Image (cartoon, rainbow, N blue to C red; front, top):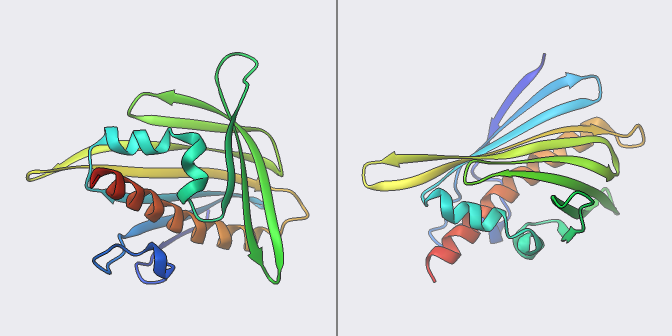
Length: 187
């Protein structure tokens, strides 16, 4: 099992730094599950209560408004009355546009966890979860936010490129969530 850990506070896009000029730290772990399967975990500390982070994460159709490289996020009718979400990621990679589409079934455990599993899409497998854990540091109440995905790309997608791209994207996405929570809290 190969486990790489990376924490990089300085390689974020300029528009994703906070007003103070300091980007929050995002820890990334990559685990090789099988030859072409990876589990990637991203963690960030957000100095706001769980309820505020939950509100941002579960506003599913607004996610594309502030998550970098997320071109579309829309709710679909679920045959069993659950939560079904279609998302399309889009970005420029090696001088061509790369898009990936997933339809996810979601299961919410209020204020604790959102699990998701691909039911249709451009991967052989794509599943994971958002976990929210409250913390207190003196008078500050915050949330440890952890995003974990298990990804299994199709043979036409080079695993090394997917792994590298997802790692960078997850860092940017968690910082974008951090910023969205900060923005909403200051209103």
